[in-house]
Structure formats: structure tokens, C-alpha cells
Amino acid sequence: MASRIAVRSAATADLTAADLIQLRQLLWAAFPKGEDGFTEDDWQHAMGGQHFVAESDAVIVSHASVVQREIHVGGVALRTGYVEAVGTLPDRQRQGFGSAVMRAASEHVRTAYERGVLGTGERAFYERFGWRTWEGPAYVRTTDGPERTPDEEGFIMVLRTASTPDLDPEASISCDWRPGDAW
Image 1 (cartoon, rainbow, N blue to C red):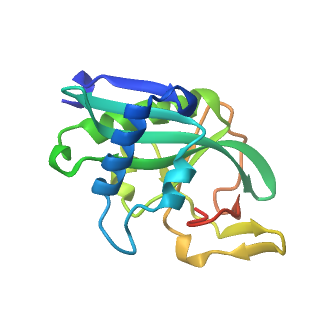
Image 2 (tube, one colour):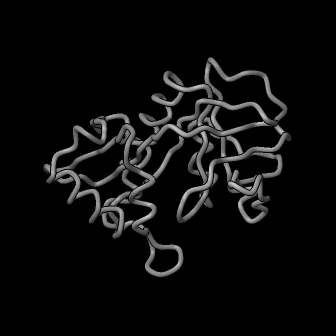
């Protein structure tokens, strides 16, 4: 079914007010309440890039965004497409909408960036699109220097692109610090 689902792409600046309202409702509904729920920081992390949305009956039912971040691998800075805010309305899950937006987001990363990165506990879902679990240690870059983020290790996934340099898959990986979840 996912191959017949139309996915629309738009930069954050091109989203309408109605789009933004629907996306907020979708993302808060798609994640569990409480500690693992969607937060205002998560919302901010998803803005400023390219959004991929699937609609049904003029309602946005699934979303993924790709924002640019500088990720370092073994000390090498890479222009990275970082996938954020992947979610589908609960009553539309397992119908191919999430796969459709992730297929489009992954293709965008492959054509526009040196590497793709995302953080997830749902590795099997992303593996279908070519994403692989990063094997090396993870860090966040802070004003005080790098800080290890061992709780994130095993949950960071990467996507090779045509311009990905040959890097050691067990080297350290680091992201810039940001409020909320660093990864």
C-alpha cells in the first residue's frame, strides 16, 4: 500500500498555519504520554528543514522531517540530514503511511547530505530503508568539551549516501548540544 501513498514535501517556511496545527496534533497523538512523549523541544528540533507528509482525506496522517546538523564521526565533521519527528496518527498506523514518509525522507538525505543520522528505539522499522545502527561510542559536544552519551549507544542509526566518506563504523560519533534530547 505504501507505494500508492502520495507524499508531499515542503520546507518549514512553506508550511501553512493549518499544516502546522495538524502536525502538532499528529505528533503529540503519535507518541505515548509521559517521559517518552513528544515535547516542545522535539517540536523545535523538527523545524527548519524539509518536511515529508502523507495525507488522507485532506488530513495529514504521517510526518517526518529532515534538518541539517553537523555530526562528527571520528573527528570528521559531516553535513548531515538528521531525521526528526517521525510519526503517524494512531488510527492510521500500520497502513503504509509511515513507510511512505520515511522512504521519501531517506531519499532526500541520500541526495542532499553526506550522511543521514537519527535516534530511535524502533531500529527494525528504519533498517528497511537502509539505515544501520552505529557501532561506536556516542558523545554530545558541549562548551565544556565532549560528553559521552552511553544511553544513546545502540539507538543511533546512520544512512550512507553517495558522498559519505569512508569512515570507521566503530569510531566515535558526536552531535552538537541542544535543549531536550541531544540525539
